[in-house]
Image (cartoon, rainbow, N blue to C red; front, side, top):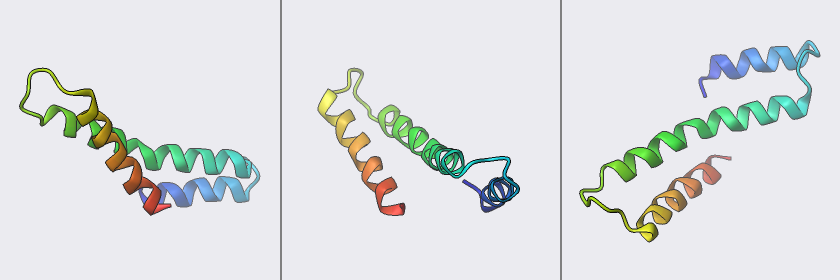
Length: 71
């Protein structure tokens, strides 16, 4: 999520328009949005016509681990 968006959300939280739990939930959802695009790109880049379920799970686990490191 861009820093400017995080700053605007933080300002709304400071003014009392957003509660802390809503702010955290929005930040987490916006941070994870790019992960889905990366997963999709990883799956579509596979050359096989039919994709093995284990390979898809490995791609998901890879990006899930990356997002946990950021937190």
